[in-house]
Length: 295
Image (cartoon, rainbow, N blue to C red; front, side):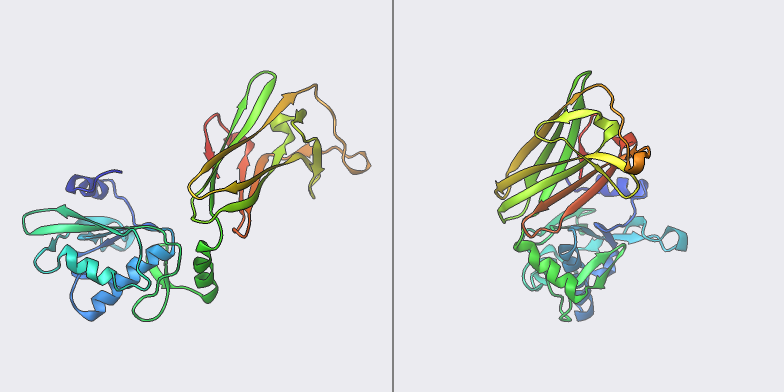
């Protein structure tokens, strides 16, 4: 993990790194012992945990020009005596329920000044702010969550979460589609499947291990359909799935009433596992390379 220090923050300012869903800059006056500022701290930190996690840097001011908003302008250091790391941690610990894994990095600017970098993980449950509401990150700010969004966050701990990447290896006569999947949740993925819709121009005409199904979509474009099932993927574990394919002589495929049917120009991937919201990705054929692609 890259270390947080003054040089790193200086480089972010120089590189004009903009605030985003996972990054927020806060000037020194955002830290105060007043109740209103504490409420803002709790709201901001909980919004990251309720979303995808991220980093809040206290002690960096934003540019005030309208066309440069959300860019870091300069280091605006926190006075250690006025607001210590312990004081910040005490405020964060008032979030209900507590967020596991929050880390506060102290970046020294001088003997009496510093920046606090708060590293917040994505949580497996929803966290409530002091006003009794739940917040999420939206672009550059924290906004209140809808009821269904809160339910979805609570459900993170009841279903698995799968992260996946794939790679296509081909030579003159033989090829292989390889998937790496990982269960990043604390729940077993008991039953899952990767569904592939492979453009015929990518691997066609072909024979695929165990599958010879060709499908026409509503636009009369054809593709090969295959499934890669998996089961009992335990928390933190990875699994590799693959299918081989062979090139054969080109065939002609006709659609309804003999109409010419063209191939799709994208590879479509869907991943299902128990009650997890399904994952879907379309990758244009032209974007496929020999490197691994995240889904």
